[in-house]
Length: 279
Image (tube, rainbow, N blue to C red; front, side, top):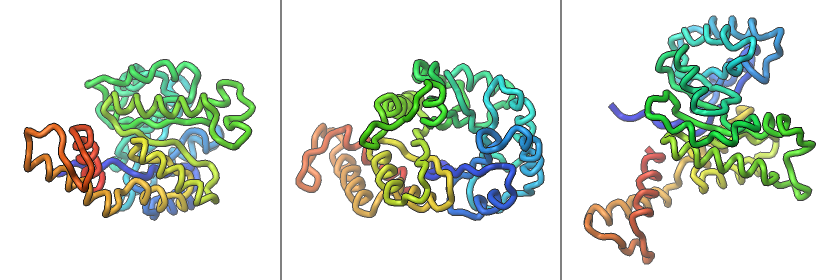
């Protein structure tokens, strides 16, 4: 059986809006995250859970995930009831502070896959290596700047020139390194201005260059640019295949020339990852 590819686009949708849920399910997103947390007001949490329970069977399209409320919140336990739906693939856990939170959640949910958002509290920045646990059901890690900036008491998460401030760039890099160390998918955070397509494309392409393999989305219009950014181009695939073929022809070689440039074993690893993403 072929391995199911990691989602490129993870589209959030408020779980209490029947219209928005229907639109998300009909989108080209690789995964939809039915949100029971930030985008749903406290007095709408119960209605959101009931709406999800009435969805019926999934018929193709995006894979279904649910963002529950954080461990320790008054809504957390009730949110777990929606995981009984047969077509829910996994849980998105917000405000995770360490790998222990993932293990703790798994005691209530069994082996269902978990995507942890790992940089939303001050304490979370000190636990990124703790997610490296072979027994964990963790499959993805993403980062968030909005909750982190609120937790830190920041007046803004941007520098005067409009670029992301150092603290949040650090959180992003720690998420990437932590996910790779844990052997799970690194997922870039949201691009808040859904009307700025050029800005989204630039950020998504930069994330793909750095090593992220997917990105969170907050509007269906963001899905296409995200999918494109995390899909290797024909030229990238051809170059990667040439590297793989060269080392297959000379398996004992340490360094080879491909396309007029010297490549070594790290280039081979990168090439294999490009081909995996293309598949």
